[in-house]
Image (cartoon, rainbow, N blue to C red; front, side):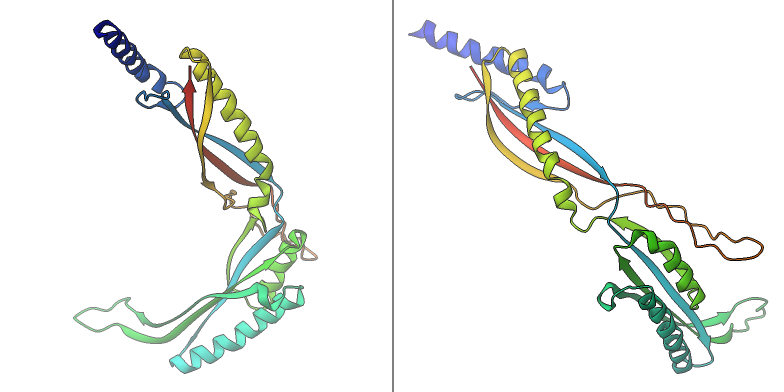
Length: 248
């Protein structure tokens, strides 16, 4: 009886001693042995790159006036023109959203010496909206229209997917197959017969994170040309976390 118990303990110690070596391969971890077999934990990531199906641009105007009321009124008039220009390019009202309004006093601090206070200049109002469209090819003309309507602050464009999760459906199957092959490889290297899936959890980046496109104003001597915009591709990354039990 004592010899049998000693043999079981020796086998358990040998398995635990082998664990650190496995933990250094491929960023995976084998936890301490259990009566049902040790647990292997690792993650698999899959990246999907696709042409974007929507884009958004930000545009705004800045106005200055002697009083806050005058500055706000002047800005409202300018923003009405800007929003009308966006709608004229086919942007729906529900796809235009105010992203920020700022009112602040302005002072001149130049050449103020001998304890003199800064000179008050008036009030400045900045107002901006963000317009979203699925017409990727219309982004350049949209930017031009916003600037022509008085837009002075341009932000973007930024590109993305309307349904980023749908973009990752195929990636899940690929990740699961890759995880199964990886787990089987670990089992073979550790001297086990196979593996049993214990758990799967999902994490990762669903928000597309593309590089910001280069946008430039293109003009020639006789006429204006639409601003060129290249959407490129956006990237979504899926990460699945796996736990497998190694089986003798």
